[in-house]
Image (tube, rainbow, N blue to C red):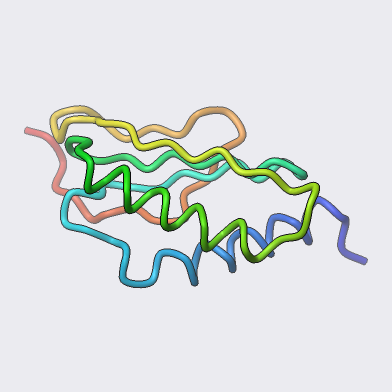
Length: 105
């Protein structure tokens, strides 16, 4: 039998699969998610964060939150990590999207 935490994690991953459709821009380096019910945290890692990136993250957030009923809450952020810096997961996160990149020289 699947645990409640595992079922929530699967629901979150499926929700992101739908929500990211047509939202991946060339500047998006990765999306890291931490689904710890009832909170879903997500970091959208961009080369640079401008208003367009903030609007995209807000739109993805709306799609994800629409897949759940209260008391689920979301906290999505757009962060800038230059291409020269590695993308790293924070504790409890997992990748839901990761752009293919060459190794830094």
